[in-house]
Length: 467
Image (cartoon, rainbow, N blue to C red):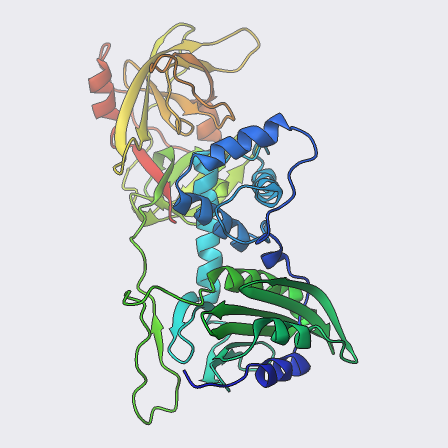
C-alpha cells in the first residue's frame, strides 16, 4: 500500500459531514457490572453464556437490526444485551426475563433478516484498503474511488461511507481529530492502543470515524449522514461498525479481487454467504380450507412465516381468542376436519410437529380432556416445547380444539416429559374465527393413536419462520 497520511482525508470528511453519539463502540470496553446481584440478570447471563459463540454474536447482531441493541457484537453478555433482549421480548408481548425462547429467537432472526434485506446489507471486501465492511447497497447505491479507499454514497449525496488506508501515527491522528473546530461538536471519543473512534456533529450532519492500527499502517472508515435522518441511519451506522474488519484472514474466500485495467472503479468482491440456515419450527397449525391455516396468535412474532416450506401471510389475528388465520397457498386441504366437544376425562390425541434435530417431525401425545365447571377446555398431556397450535383430536378422529399459546416452558424430570395441564381453544371457537366448513364426522369406533395421526395428517401442517 502506498505511503500516505490519513489526516487530510479524514478532516475533509469531517468538515463536509460529521457525527453523533457512539453507542456502537461504547460496549467495546467492558460494560459496568450491575450494582447488586440480580437473580433475573444472573439467570439470563447463564442462559446466554452456554450458547455457542456464533449464536451469541448472532443474537446481538439481530438485536441491532431490530433497533434494540446499540453495542458491539462481541458475544459477551452485559447490561446492554440484557436490556435489549428484554425490550424485544416486551414488544413481542412475551415475558421480559432476558432469556430468549425458541419462538422468540426465531422471531428475532426473521425480523432482523427482513431489515437487512430491505437495505440490501452486504459484506464487501475493498481491494484498495484490504478491509471488510458491510454496505447497505440499497441506500448507498453509488460508488467511486476515494483518496485512499472507496466511497459508497447515496444518489442524493445525503449519506456517504468512505474507507481509508495508509501510513500515519494513530495517537497523533486521534489528537488532531478531537481538536476543537468552529461549529463542530465532538459527541463521543475513545482511544485504545490499536484503534480509536470519534463521533461528532456539525452543520446539521452526523459523522462516525473509526481507525484501526494494523502493524505499521492504518485502516478505517468515515460514515456521515444528515441529523434530520438520524432515525434512518443510526441503526445502519451501528451495523456497519460491527461488520468492519480491518484485516480479514489472508487467503480466505473473501480475499480482495484485483481491479481490471481501465475500469475506473475500485475492486470489490462480495463475500460468499455462510451456510444456509433451515427455517425455525415455530408452531403447528390446522388446515381449515384450501389455502387457509389456523394457528395461535404467536405467529405474529414471525415476519416471514412458511407453511410446507412455502411463503404464507397472516390474514387476521384475534388476540383475545389467541388465534391467527394464515393465507397459505401450499395448504391443499379441501375442508376442515370434523369437530366435536369432548366429555370430561375423554381420551384425546395431540398431533403436532417437533424439531429434535435438523428435520421437522410429526409426533403425537395421548392425553385426557379436562372440562372443569365454569372453566375453559384443557388437556392433560406430556407436551413438548412448540406444542402451541397443535390440533387435538378425540379417538374418533374428530377435532376438539387447538393447544393455546402459553408462556409455560415444559420441563423434563429425570429425562422424562411429565404430563401437565394445557389450555385449549375449542373447535367451536376455531369455527367462529375462521368460518370453517367441517367435513362429515367419520363413522368409526375408537381408534389407536397411530390411526388418529394417519386420519389427521391431511389437516396438520408445520408453521415455520424463515431466517
